[in-house]
Amino acid sequence: MDFDADIRQQILAKLPRSPDFDAELAGMRIRDLLTVYANWLSRLVYPQPRQVRESKLLRANPLTSDSRYAPALTQIISRVTNGEDITRHPACSS
Image 1: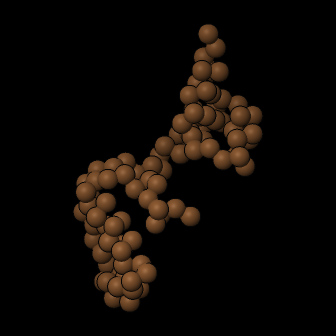
Image 2: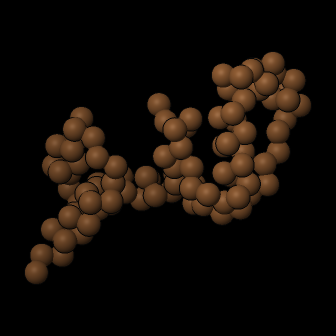
Image 3: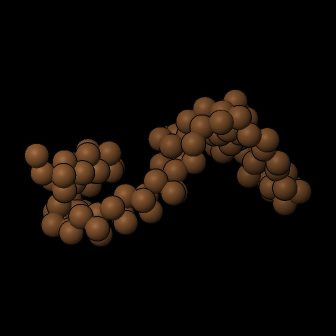
C-alpha cells in the first residue's frame, strides 16, 4: 500500500481533466496537489434551494428581455431557485 499514490489517484480522478494541466498535476508533490484540490473544492457551489434576488440594474437592462438571453437567464434562475446543480449549465460554460 502506498498512501500518497492512493491519494494522488483519488484526487486526479475527481479533478476536472484538461490536457493542458494533466502533466502539471501529475508531476506535483502530494502537498501541492492537495492544495489544488482543496482550492477547487472550495469554489464549488453545492446544489441547494436558494433565494434569487435580481438587482434593479439587472431588471432595467434591456438584454434581460431580449429573446437571445431571456430563456437562459430564466432557466438559470429557475435551476438555482429549485436547488439544481448548475455546475455544467450550458449557459454558464465558456
